[in-house]
Image (cartoon, rainbow, N blue to C red; front, side):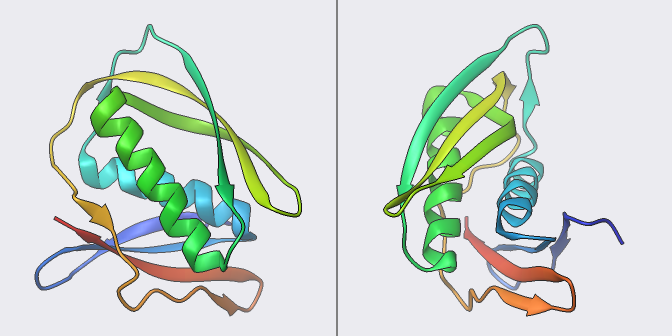
Length: 135
């Protein structure tokens, strides 16, 4: 199995992903890729954009939800998708420099990333969680 990744899993009313990574940063990157997969994002290949943002430190679950909701906002409102993340951390926040492309189209809408049954667990040598998306 890859060191980090995602898979779409069945959910009765919403969308859900199982996401894993060797560390928390890998988990964030895999969750971002999974979000874009669920949205069925198509990009303009000849574009390049950078965007920096910070997320206030909290529980890993809260940081994950805030991170994905920020990406969802940028995707839907600013038409930007990011595939490369440089992440640093200080005492108060997680600081992200994201690099990506302009969105040509979205195949699906997602309202929000939820805390529904969200728990990041350590499993052998990786972190794993299930994320539910409100559609």
